[in-house]
Each structure stands twice: as C-alpha cells, then as structure tokens.
Image (cartoon, rainbow, N blue to C red; front, side, top):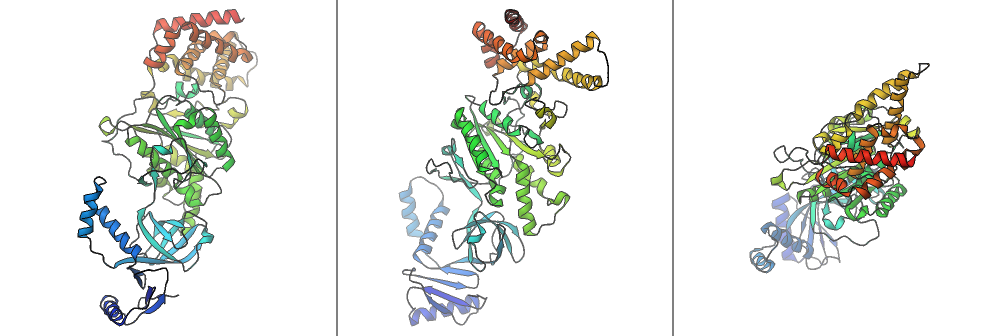
Length: 575
C-alpha cells in the first residue's frame, strides 16, 4: 500500500470506540495535520494498537510497551541487584506511544538495498527488514540509505518495510569463541553447538592512541628460521605477507599459529573469500597439531555475500581487541586483504561511489588503515596486551606496485615477499631476502638469535650477486667456488618443511653450525639428516644449554663452543 505524509493507518484487533476515535483524530490533527485514518484489523495485536503515519509508527501494543520498559531499565545502568532496580523502574515508568521510524525498500539487487524514510539512521547501524534479513547502513544520502545485506537479497522485496535496530554493526565476544569456527556475524558454523556469550562489541572501533601504546619489545616467534633470524616479528607489529598465488603465504601464517602452542598467545585466523574446502583443510590442520585449543577461525567464504566478506576482518579484529583488553597477546591473520578489497569495491560501485585507480574507490586506503592500526602493543597501565597482525596480500605476476599492495605496504611495519621462482625451484619458504624487511621486529628479537644470525643477510646478499655474475663466467677459481658452495649451503639452511616450526634453541643451533662453515662439506641431500642429528645430540647431552637459550635468551661464547664441538663430532661420526 502506498503511504504518503497525509495518510494514517490504524492496526488493531478490534474497532476503536467513538471516544477512542475522537482522541485519535485529535492527536492526528495536532501532530500531523491529518483529518482521518484507515482501519485495518490485525488479530495478531492483543490489547493495543499500532498507528502508522507516513514513515512513523506509534506502537501501543504489549510488545511495544514491554520494549519501552526494557529500554527504560537499561538507561538506569548497572547489572547488579536487579530486584530493587526493577521495583524502582516499575514505580517510575509511565508508558507512552513512542514513535518509530519505518522505511521502505525502493530497490534491491546484488546484495544492496536502497531504503527511504529512515532519516535518523546512523552510519554502520543494523537495519531490520520485515522478513528477518539484517543489513548495515553503509551509504547515507539526503533522501536514501544504501544498505548492505547480510543474507540473500532474493528474500528482500521492493516496497517491504525496514526498521532501525538502534545498534551499530557488531558481534558477540567472549572466551567461549576459542576453539570454534564462526562466521562474520559471530554465529558458529562448526556444528559444535551454540555459543552463549553476553557481551556485544561494535566491529568498528578507534585504534589505540599513542599514549596508550608502548614500543614493540617482545618477540613473537614464527618458528620459521628464515623469518626469526632475519625478519623478526614483535608482539604488536603488523607484518605483511605478500606474493603471487600459490607461493606459500597461508602456510607461513599457519606455521606461525602452530608455533604459538604453549606460549600464551591467542590466535585468530580470518578467511576472506576463500573456498570452503580450503578453510576446512586449514581447520583440520590446526586440529591435527592441537592449535585449535587457542585459535578461533572466522570464515567468510567465496559463496558468502560480499557484505559478510567486507565485515569479516573487522569482526575478527573486534574479537582480538576483546582479548587484548584483558591483557592477552593475540595473533590475527587476515587471509587475504586482496579479496577483502575486491568485496568492498563491488559494494562501493553498486552504491554509486566513484572509482579511482584500478577501479577502486578512493577510501580503500582508509578501509585497511583503520583495520590494521588497531593492532598495538598496549602500555602496562592499559593491561599490557597486544595484537600482532599478519595481513596477506596477493600480487599479480609479482607486481608489488599495484594499488592494493602499495597501500598495505605503506600501512604495515614490514613485509615478507614470497617469490614464485624461488618457490618453484624448491626453496620453501620462498622468501626473497632482498625485498623482505621487518622495520621494528629487530628491537624485539632475542639477543641469542641476534647473536647467532650474525652476518647472515650480508652473506646471502653477496651470494646472490656472485651467483648472478657467474652465470656469464667460465672457469671458477678455488675461492669463488668456496663462496658459491657456502652460499648454496645457506640457501639450503633456509629450507624448512611445512608445519614443522623450530624451537628457539634449534634455530640457534642450525645458525651457529651452518654459519661456521661446518656444513659446507656435507652433501646437499644429507644436510637435513645431519642437522637433525646435531640438534638431537645437543638436546640429549646438553639440555642446560637448550634451556638457557629458550627460557633466558642467553648465548655465551662458552655455549657456542659447546655447540660447535658437539656438531663437529656428529659430522665426523656421520661421515
């Protein structure tokens, strides 16, 4: 039915009496300058009525009055000692016909609904459609609201009514989410039962200020030798993982999660726009290695509507902030922000926002910056918690100068660049040492690892230059051949099997033994077996050395000599 400003409709289960009719007409004349109303019998309303005038609804039903009472109690605040609170509320409360804004869907399609009539709706507010579908106000115009839908748009029809919820978009939070797989709205999708929590946080939140933070000073070790030795990550840092498709980006993130076992770090893995089978495989891997005991997976797959893919990383970050505010250290993986940007671009173009570079709207930078800036290492007087972010970005043919990669590189504190040529040559993880960097993690690197890594990056750089030059050379002199053999040994050291993160003492043992040229005489195919024997012998015979490295971060010259002498003996016996 078409509703205009001078049209009033009364919904009730019975016809109003003459006295009631006169009172209604007097109210309509004084409030809306309306002289009459239409009556529609609605048997679902008991002992009350609803009066609709244009886009406004006056709710005098039992449900409406109870909702008023609930809202009145909430304004009093406090959650303790309910009995005197309720008694006082009932004595003070006087019900009134409260006006509600009711909007209408003017058009719908591609996960977007245009709504008119909700002039007071706020940006990010949840809107409720008459068939139960929820949406979020994302585009506020003078006479219309662009609303993204969190369900199929086939369930929303043009002309259907829309009401405000009064809540901004958010999700429930609580420790009950640890070990669970949820969607972007916080609903469980792992068939392990309902998650009952009471707290509800908005998904958009201001990043902590400078005064509330402290410098990155504690390592978050990945267990990957190439990263912990040359590009260390600190708790509270944002380290980008970037590279082409199928180069091992997700594997690095998953191995980092596996390495947090027993270290008091809560992990959150956010899957954005991935295949459901891929997410299932990741969950199975985390369960296999016991990592789901401290991990939450937030999944918004490729089959989900774009709005859910858009809010997924914000939902995951909201859960991470809940734990950080309790003083916990949190690791969050966004896999990946390229698909997140595509989802946002789809929504923005349908909403009519002007495209810019590579057809992305200009606020795409702000989209990711306000997400990643929420990662922080909080000051001790603010609980001392932290959020460490590992965003993942996919490149096309190694082009790091594209719009989204350059945006995220400029936001983060460093990047791990994975190279396709290295990956397909068997160098895994395929980290390009020259293009990768960690801008703050070195301040949080343990002294033992820093001491053991020594001149590793410099030696690798010299090897790369020499190897590139020798492609055009003929005979090699003895010194050049030794340098190439040593560099090849270093590259072999950086190879590491998937889902097998190293402990800190193993990383240091491998670094000390390899950088001392002891492994240069070992054949390439024997390297893995020999280095494993060396580590096992030291762990068995010099347990105190391993303990000092792991717990105290100490590495003395005497400990280095012990490691080298034990390694030399193992290599001698192996030969």
